[in-house]
Image (cartoon, rainbow, N blue to C red):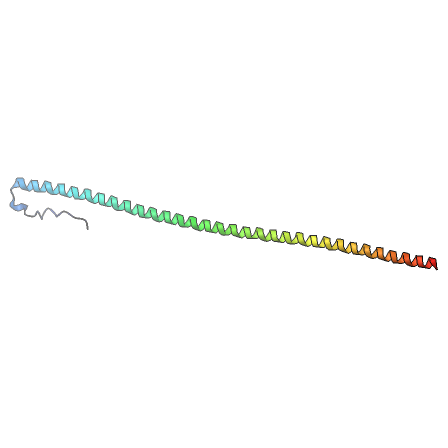
Length: 134
């Protein structure tokens, strides 16, 4: 794709020119070749810069993808921890309710037992009073 200068053997008609014209053509050709080399260097620099930009963009895209994946994983971990905490809280609440129910049952049973004993004592007192009257 790059232009190349013709070898010295192909002087494009310089053989027919006088010697002063030949050296002038040779100098012009060297200047033209130097200009072409400078343009090639500029093109290479632009191509390298473009390639670096592409690679930089790809790197930034990869970094963003990695960051997004990391954030997604962290979010998933937080969600798992939150669910575990909610489960533990539900279990703790369930155990608190169960303990309260147990205490309520025990208080009810004790109250029923005292009422039963009072009733039994009252019945025995009535029988004893009935026997004493007879």
